[in-house]
Length: 298
Length: 332
Picture 1 (cartoon, rainbow over the protein chains, first blue to last red):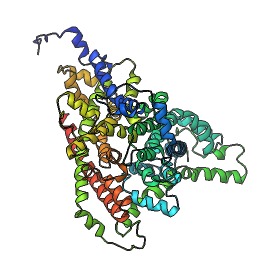
Picture 2: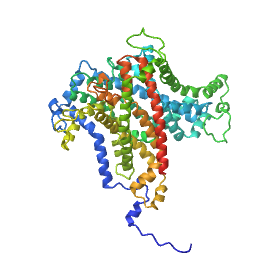
Picture 3: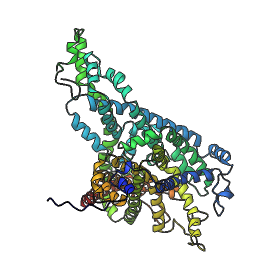
């Protein structure tokens, strides 16, 4: 045991510094950046091309090689989409806003209330009920779709905006997310001392919990708005052929029929994407945070 | 009786309101008891109420509908059908074709999706300039409405003047007869899988990235003794360490992938048809459920089909979770 092992052949100093360092502490090389630029370009390309076609004439759309620069017809194409008689496109955008805003507001309110109860209040059955909430996350929404349609019919809601709002007013993921956030960000002592002063539960919610969870509300709100705006299958079942489609249903209408004018369809598609691009620019960091903290596919 | 989760033991366990100086009147006592005992349930009741009505009830009722004759075009035709709908299902070629398509697209869409997401996450897991800019960037497909992006891809993959065919012709394919992407199963599957991959790679990459960043750094230091380079580091350390998230994404992609609806629906030249191609080349089960229920107006049969789909999802998700678990465990 006294024999000294021959010294390992020394690595080149720079390489030794790199090895053994966690990847997130390793500086990105120029190769990393090139790969990332490629990823970003591929991510953005369909959007860019949507815009190109939305701004082109029919001839430019069908030319070979395809034109890759935007044309000057965007306003014209948009006007055509918005003035179409058989598809209520402008109304559909307004409907999308109504649905997304109502669903988002209600999700934020109900989920933060329930999350608060699950995180900070003590009541019999609490932990078991929380498990139930999490289990509901795993149910595929396809399963009840036929019966949900029949139920909406019995309620007299088929073909109304109510039918695409009501089932989404609160979400299991939202409850779970709010609970996690409130558990970690609202100190027990604060809640406790407010109760000592005789504050009722709703008072604690209003003046202690709500101010503390604003970041989480932003994250959940953005995720909910995006998911609701993009919802397609259920609105299609409910609103297809009515005068109150959402913009996604209207898009599918635009693309149906025997003679489809793609510059028009994609001008509509681009118009329906703009609100979400604005949200991504304004709240991109929050959306990233929400997903990285464990968001779930809608 | 303390109301919060982990009140310090020093605090008097008596309810706060009884020690409040002005806790005299009986009505106030009643109010506080109500606040303690009932209000928590009130706060969580919206979720359970709405779930019971719009989640649980439809699932149970779906079972009933599946066992009945239930047609939208003929309301007089009612009554129990017994297992007739399920029997029909077993002998329905359209169902088996849709099942085949669903699995084909699912595999083409999931395997590359998760592998590429892993690579992208690995790229993002570096010390970068403008870190959040890159992360927001990979989310572009995620926020793009699937209806909008699918319509672009539908143009991209069109036979005449489509960009995909133009790109193929640049490298010498199909110059005399352009590929009709919608005509064969394999090409239609590939086109649809491309859309799904495009949409979800960035999202999954962020899930992986968040798991990667919580790996303790000393694990990498220990690995340096073996002289593991970046590539080995990724496969030998990072991947096994983020295994729970891998299982999670595999299960999520299974649940989502087997219910695929939007992309096959809007890939159609006439989406209103819901037929998944002239010959059902790419008709998925979710699409078939929609067609049977709301085009053929046979809700009973559609309900039976959704039960079959649920069963399949359950089995595949369990198998996948198991397999991913094994895979990660073997590498450790």
